[in-house]
Amino acid sequence: MEKALYLIPVPLSEIFDSEENKKVLPEGNAQIVKQIRHFIVESRKSAVRFLISVDKDFPIDDCTFDELSEHTDEKTDMAKIMEPLLKRGEPMGVISDAGCPAVGDPGSRAVEEAHKRNAKVIPLTGPNSMIMSIMASGFNGQNFAFNGYLPVKNGERESKIKQLESRIYKENQTQIFIEAPYRNEKMFEAVLKACRPETKLCVASGITSGNEFIKTKSIAQWKKETAPRLNKVPTIFLLYK
Image: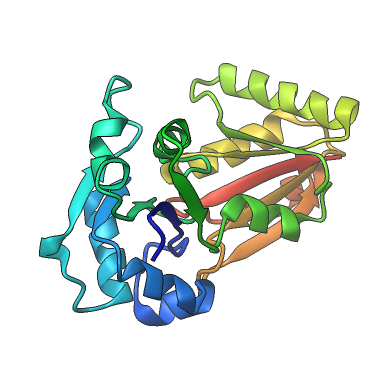
């Protein structure tokens, strides 16, 4: 077991169980995870559920969990949190609530600190909704940009969508963005309102789950269809020409 910061992917769905893990995670990941006792997590509750899905007898009481989320103070001393690795040479793991940590995820702060301290970083293989969505979209996979969350306020959101659409045509670049699941349907409506009829939109929702939905259509075509049910389902939006 190398003394390193391990970036541990989890399934994209909210259901963590051993059978779900087998579908989307390499078997070797579990053997690594079982040897780690110090974790940096987006939320302790979600991380514990995942660890128990890896091994129902996982020694949770022997583990330490430090939360690193969007609510974590920017002044938090990451070096102190990472003392098990940096001072004692014990392996540590980073776990996001869904998918791969440190991609559109606060876990990148732990990775940054590891590099500053010359500690080894080992990313494990697992599902990433951004990459999987562009694979399935039919859009330009050689030139794309992940824009994270767009502005929430009406007007600002539409303005940002138009800005991203402009980059599609000027730079031949696929534009990818996300929204809080409970606002997905408003985002879908905003995209239809803001974009040109010929612009293409791919909606990739519930990736790897039993309700997976991935469709690419022009804005004009989407307007003729019944809107997909996206409420409270993790969804990726992609735009291209």
